Image (cartoon, rainbow, N blue to C red):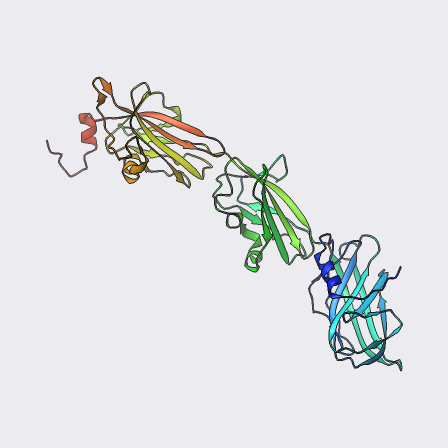
Length: 404
């Protein structure tokens, strides 16, 4: 089979745009006998299905006149076209008029069947004048290689990335390090992130700086802020360029789980999840350690005045969402004074007190830490401000005498 046609810019653009590209070819040239044909020293070339190839170079310093073109090969190359200029196609062993100066030079062909990785061809190109004298000679050595996209994730909790075993992460705001450094025969990379349950798809070709960091590419900098959420899963695609080969893996962010602890008036650390009765704390010592909360990218804190039976008074209440991971030191009183607008119902800050909220009704507070990734989850305890003489003395700074 032998097919010859003119090579034009639209045709070349069409070849470039084909998404079904399967193979890439590197074409380092050998020394030519006459410098009128030139190919790049190296680089990936577009290749079409069934092992097809396309090599592009330039032809220059060729005087106007008639020339004969020959093309030899070392292997199984079965179809060849030589196109010089925008509208001239040369058939091997025929003469054609050459009237142009410098122009693009394209050789098209294919290797029958599916070309194997590493398959090679030598293409010998020669031009003769009417007297049969050799004018120009060039040999292109082509090595066809199969591109391969390889995607892994660093610093994950494990998982292969398939549908039944997603790559797992704890904390939807922490780095999600994509590693594509093991990909083969690629000079460009395309990355796409898609929520498994549907939603906004983020995908594009990487910049030069991003490609250089493909071994440690943080997806948090690739997607919009707040895109990843705890308890949700996402498909991540990595594809190679200019020859397309892709791989996709599923990643999952573990649900957020609230937890906290409080140091009571006796200096004992009490776990909120296991507390069976109200926790007594000293005035000024109402500090919550919420660092045991896991996989959270935002959290909620609230405090509500109540009685010993957990019934709210609806008089002094405060609550607010915070971004990031819950910290180890949360001063409840400082938050109330720092964000008075979040206090209800009056929208004004209030002190945390012991004593009674009504005659014979001791004052307690319901303290809550909650998360919402993917659904609301909370831990709540009952706290009593201990204003006994013992606690007052214990809270007095050393070296200073409390006024009587």
